[in-house]
Image (cartoon, one colour):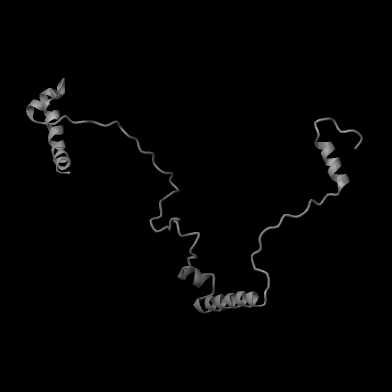
Length: 142
């Protein structure tokens, strides 16, 4: 364990010694002799301007992991403008909870039902006729 620790401590020194031992080439040699490190230049990057009508909203709420599991209540603005105020909002919520409780106690069906597939509204003759029309052969006599 001690040897591994010493090896890890010596690695930066070895890397620096190797970089000093390599002779620079070309224009970088003059800069290296003067004591300056070579300057790297990056390629030019052009940024595209966003459309004029679009501006990021710093206050917009972004979707996150909890959106599907947690029902966020309405904002005070929504309560004031759409729900009729806090009193009406509270009455509506109480009636909704009471209705769901009454529905559950009386054994009524759930308010949100799963979709059920219905039967095909065609009889056998109409199905056979549609199959004949859908076949690649030209229809005969219909």
